[in-house]
Length: 81
Image (cartoon, rainbow, N blue to C red; front, side, top):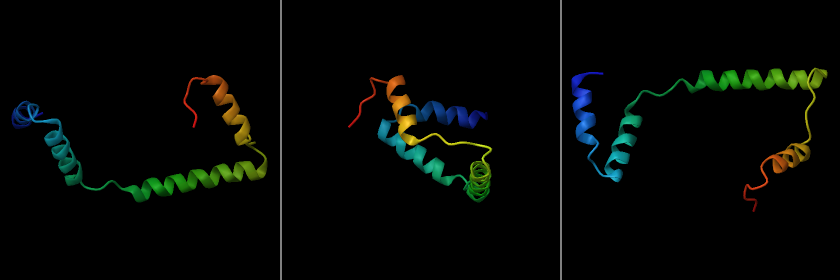
């Protein structure tokens, strides 16, 4: 890390929470965008692969009711509406 960045970090640490949040937002927005298109394409490919496994019988799904019942047993103290 450069000396300039270290100096700025030390100076900016004294800002209010609101000012640091605004600065953080500005800095994040100033970064170049991620290549979300590649990520989305990878997820579509993964979902298609999983659907093919289910359709071919290689993978078997679990009913949602069973999954939720198991989660309720595992985490009984979690607030439910």
